[in-house]
Length: 144
Image (cartoon, rainbow, N blue to C red):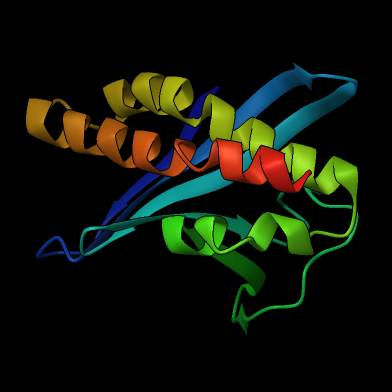
């Protein structure tokens, strides 16, 4: 696991950590690299995924969604996950990818947050955000 970036908007309304997870295996699947950003906008955590040449290909079929200057992206909040987003993914592998990232998120963020901050309160906020999103993993697995 590597922390690629820590970004904070002055005033604290938005922050993210960019995470790279390498050598992941779960069930019958393997991923050489998984990448996501754990973002917090206000108090709402989300996972961000990008479809870019410098990101690993995460999904066999990229879901329709928004784009910005950096290309197509997905931002998944707890509400989107609870609302059945995983069921909209095209394949079992795509659902497994999302479920695996969510399952690993608390441990990955626990490690990454050590590199991201020396502030104990900020460290705990990162972990709490990761746990909040990871709690949706049973919803994702049920959709798979």
